[in-house]
Structure formats: C-alpha cells, structure tokens
Image (cartoon, rainbow over all chains, first blue to last red; front, side, top):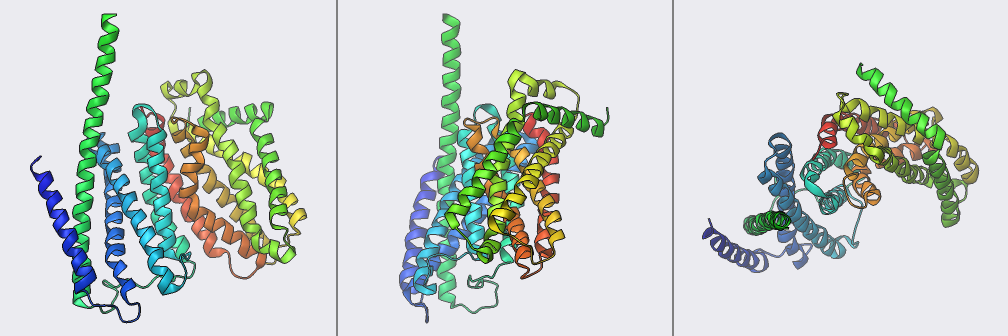
Length: 228
Length: 224
C-alpha cells in the first residue's frame, strides 16, 4: 500500500500536466467567449469532484450511524474537507469566468446559489467537528451531514423558483461540443479525481497518525498517574 | 405513560418554568423590538418600499429572536444533570423532543403575535394579497425554524461555545425555509403573485425535517 502512494502522486502530476496542455493548447478557442472559456476545463471537473466527495460524505455518515465504524467517520471528515477545497475552487473560478462573459461577478442564479449554500453547509459541518469536544463528535457530525444532504434538493428547488442564468449543461444537455474540448474536460476530470484521491489519502494517513498520537498520549498520562 | 402524556407533562413543565422566570420571552421580546427599531433607522422606507422589504425584515427579526429561545432549550436541562436523568429514564426520547419543539413553537409564536402590531405600525403595512394566507405561512415558517432549531440546539449543546454554534449550524440548513417564508410573506403583502407555491415548499421542508429529527434525535441525545 505504501508503495502505491508515490505512484499515485506521480500519476496525478502527469495527468495534471497533460490536462493543462490539453486545456491550454490542444482544445480549440471558443468562438464567442474566446480564451476565457478555458477556465471551464477546471471549473466543471472541480464541481463534479466536489459533488462526488459530498455524496461519499453522505454515504459514509449513514454507514457510520449504522455500524459505528471509525473508518467510516474518517472517510466522512476527509471527504468533507477535500470537498470544501474543491467547492472553493468552483466558487472562485466561476466569478473569474462570469466577469468577462456575463459582465458580472456574481448572480443569485440557481446553480451558483445552490453551490454556495452547499459550501456554507459543509463549512458549518467542519466547524461543528472543530468545536465539538469528546467522543460524541462523529455521531453529531453524521447527523448534521444527513440533514445537509436532505437539504440539498430543497435548496435547489427553492432557488430554482427564481430565474436561472447559468449556461445549460453541455454534457447530456443536447448541446454540441468539439470532441477536443470534451477530451480536455474529461482528462482534466481524471486528473482532478487523482488529485482528490491523493489528498484524501494523505489526509487519511494524517488522521490515523493523529489517532495513534491521541491514544499514546492517553496511555502515557494513565501510566504517569499509575506510578505516582 | 403514553407518548402523548409524556409529551404533555414535559411541555407543561417547560411552560411553567417559563411562566415563572419569563427569561426567554422577555429577552426575545426586547430583542425583536430592537430589531424593529434598528431596521427602521437603517432603511427608512416609505409605505411602498416597506411592503417590498417587510417579508425579509419580519423573518430576520423572528429568526434572530428564535435563537434566544432555542439556546435556552437544552441549556436549562444541563444544570443539575436533568438531561442525564432523561437519558436514564425509560421515556422515549422523541416525546421529549416533541415537547421541546412545541414549547419553542409557542414561545416564538407568542413573540410573533406581540411584535406583528409593531411592524404594522412602524412600517405602515397593509396586505394587498389574501391576508389569511399569512397564518399558514407564519405557522409553517415558525415550525421550520423551531424543529431544526431544537434539534441543532441538542447538537450544539456538546460543543465549546455552544451559543454561537447553534446559528452556525441552523442558518445554512434553514436557507430553503427562509426563502420560502420571506417570499410567501412578500407576495401576500404586495399581492403581486400567488404565495401558494412557497407555502407548499414550507410544508415539504417541515415534513422532511420533522421526520429526520424524529429519526435521528435519540442517536444525538445518547451520543457518547
């Protein structure tokens, strides 16, 4: 397993550089938007990766409540943290694209607002984990994660009742896309998935080390109390 | 004892406590009054403008003052280890949750009843749409705040700086409910469009989160 980590790291590096080459050089320039459209190769994969991670967080939270396995809890906290990172990338790259194309940094459109609310909910989830004391943290966090996941469709539909301004989804939306663009997008997504897996993995190792450290400290203080 | 009876007993105890101390009601009432006054200085609206923004103002005032009551809900039970006694007792956890939620609902509803005349007077409000729809909007909106608020108050009870943790958890989750109640109220006041779709949204939100709270409350209460 330990050998796999550097291999994944190298693979991620290769994927990311190849995807960068595809996005900047190979993919043709978009007709109306020009070069600014190229941010789409980072914006969309980051969004997909974030949504995937939040879905894993939801499943892991349910598994934790059902089985009380510490691994499920570790997976939940890690996917929430890395998911918030990718969601932040989405929220930063979106306005960078919107400013030249729409002429505005932000609009309270359904996708933008839903993504922002999603980000807010998972930040509050992470704050709960930070502020919560003692062994009940995983249970409380899992309950909040389930509430957040239940809230997502409601957020979406409540905001959808307003006018929507976001460009319609290109994949599966019936729109036509240059195959080279699609290629760049999908390779970028693979690169982002590798990056997310890499981040989750190293964060998982950190979590294990933290647990071992906590246990060692607890044992030490018990031993110290015993000799006194 | 049946669930109904247990709920009634717990609710009666909470109401009696509040009746004798009036801690939550007084601070909520004063807080809501302050919000009314400060908003009127901040925006200085005329009658037409205030009709446009009143939906938002009213609900922000109620939301913030509801936090006062919600923070007290469980904090009261921590003193003298009452909460631990609850957990040992064979009484179903959900009957206690229901009693707490109904109690908070009554407190917030009372505040709404008392401050609404103030809003009407200070902002010269008059409903152009069907005014009776304000009643279901208020009831469903208040329940939406209170049911999640009671649940998250139990969650934030176990954290450091619990008073600030409750709004941090409650506000993001409540966003669809806030969108619903503000738009329902605004559309009734301005009479521009029907409030029905927003009331349905509130109802859906209430049903989903009432069920979720009942399913998860016992787990949260007994979290160790």
